[in-house]
Image 1 (tube, rainbow, N blue to C red):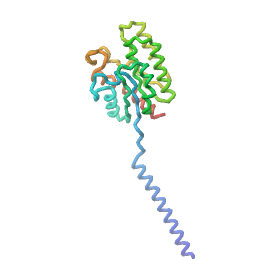
Image 2: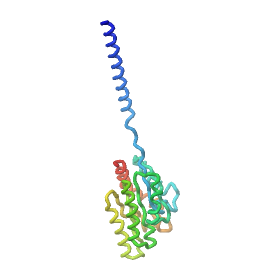
Image 3: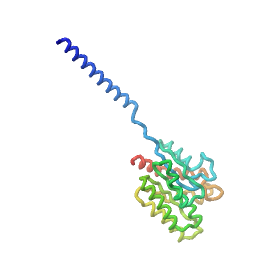
Image 4: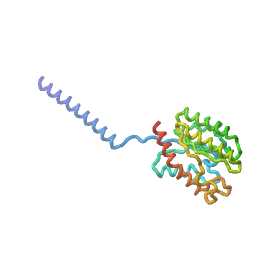
Length: 225
């Protein structure tokens, strides 16, 4: 009986030793494999023709160049195309629910240029953008708001009121703010298409380089949610 007990004890110890070794092996293999890779951050670009790439080849438009810049910087993000040429803030507001059907993690709002071109009352522009930002805030979606200036031919008073809309909204909690989407590009013939309104590929490159740090902050905020 004593020899059987000893043998049983040895067998139990051996089984325990094998279990410990197996657990250690799993731990080592898991560490070698590294942590699970997080899914790419999905960013909706809700905009007008500037986001939609009016007049540009697909691989030269804003989304394509921004996507390439993010990849070059090692940022794992996927851009969702929500640009519609000719869209106003009212149009963006009306189609927001549809645009959010892809469940983005963050949103870039680039709207307002057509409001300015049409001389829309800045109070209406602000109401539309406020509704958009309210919806995104309710979803806890980080937002990058890129502003716009009104054309100078509409007068200084209108231009100041229009610009103030974006400055006010840019101060909202949870909103990253870029005051002027076309900064460094507007009114430069070398950086715009013949219409003088839409940037050419070189102009888009400048816009992307300027916005990239803000977009990277947007990605970080989305990952922190």
